[in-house]
Amino acid sequence: MKNNLLLLALLLTLGLGAQNQKTERPNIILVMVDDLGYGDLGSYGQKVIQTPHLDQMALEGLRFTQFYAGSPVCAPSRSVLMTGLHTGHTTVRGNTGIGGVRGLGGAKGRIPLKADDLTLAQILKQQGYHTAMTGKWGLGEPNTTGLPNDHGFDDWFGFLNQRRAHHHYTDYLWRNRERVDIPHSKKHDPAYYSHNLFTGFALDYLAKRKKDGKPFFLYVPYLLPHAEYEIPEIHPDYVNEDWTYDEKVHASMVRLIDSDMGKIRKKLEALGMTENTLILFTSDNGAALRWEGRFDSSGPLKGRKRDVYEGGIRTPLLAVMPGTVPQGKVSEFVGYFPDIFPTLAEMAGAKAPKGLDGIPFTSILEGKDLKPIKRSLYWEFHEQGGKQAVRLGKWKGVRLEIDKKGFHSDLELYDLEADSSETHNLATTHLKMVKRILKIMKKEHRLSTSFPYPHEKTKLNTN
Image (cartoon, rainbow, N blue to C red; front, side, top):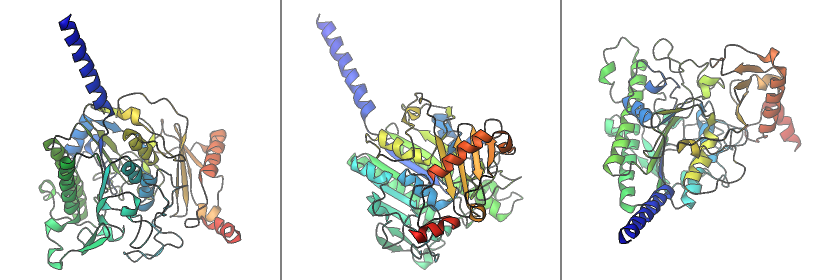
């Protein structure tokens, strides 16, 4: 009898322990690099540039093959990621718009987040998370409503302005609300290469969080492999290659990202924080250059950065968290940046606010099936003549030349299951699907005073 009671007590203890472990809120590290193409990593088909640490992450975690960025260009993609609203609804829909402020990089029309824009960082902070960011913000200039500290970040270090972030050696950065000047003598010191400074911040931050034991959210929007093509040294593996200088730098930049992801994971292991830390790794848009015949950075996909074709918006997404995220699996879940907000909110024990454009894919990260949901994914773009795109199941609709032709019905239609490279336009043979996608484009686009299409400006003037 005594032994049975002891056994029962042991089982109850183990059961409670397992329950506590399951409900413990994970630490979250979200790494988003800049202009990394769908085909730039070994786990996504790269044959020339070695990415052993990220490939190992894919082997130990989950690799998504049909995940999309928020936009084919920098600032709006970041706005979508932070707000959970797609580019038909989010505040920042382009790098420059109507109104706004003159940015630190000189360009006019920098539109900041609004004071009442709710971000992922704010939701996590409300849940008791310590929140930090290091890298490129791009959603607010000094003395605007779009500063990181006003949108949920307890601590941050990096660039406010995306154009200044084109230069990886810089004369100043920002630490919270203070400008941090970098001595001229240090401008080309490898220790002051901005990417290295950001990695240093991230590693120091992890050590601090270990001491206080508080759950944390660390957002690392790295600058690499975005031009300008500056790097402290060409990786030894590429020094003697018969390549252009920019090709060597691009490969070295990707290699440096990979190396530093290895450092971050090694730091977590040393601190004993691996099993309770979710790491997500992605890119803000497609490859800036396809590097065809050298790296083939867009892989088999059509287009590149600033295109709403697959090569401009489909991006790598890797997830790892031992004991929670399935190991060595591939997911064909069709998702995009708006889904990250509700997913991480749910994992932190919060209810995502109503009105977001994404859905949580927490169950996939936990190794369960996600019930099929009929929904569309939407993008709009306000450069290069104006563009829209919709993904609906296997179908992809693309509308171009909106600035010139308005919301016209000359749609391109592709079956991505049969034609992921978008080479066969099926619009003339699938008229019902064309009509469905045109209705979605109309429904999902909300008029913006900062980012109207040209034919909408008269509507603004009459309101």
